[in-house]
Image 1: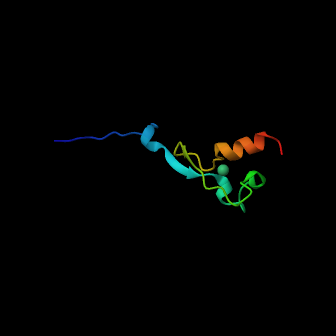
Image 2: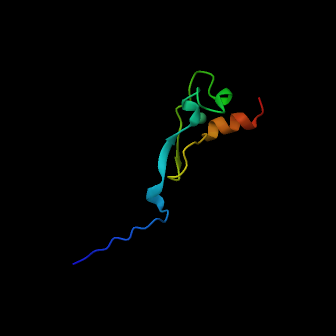
Image 3: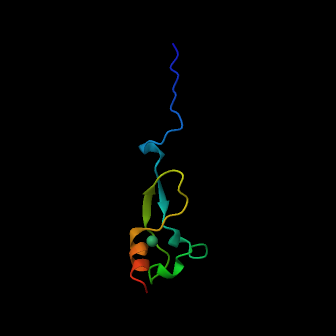
Length: 67
Ligand SMILES: [Zn+2]
């Protein structure tokens, strides 16, 4: 019996991963100035597997508020 598992290259929900907000590392973040005032961001965001940087919604909204 052959079960050829052609779980190909297509994206499926299992390809998503939890990625820390890039403001968890203020040294490398481009958006460090939008990090929480009390330190690096601890938010985790579920993103497609090929994404390697994400800014969480909290930091995004801080950046959008223009300060
Ligand atoms: Zn964040």
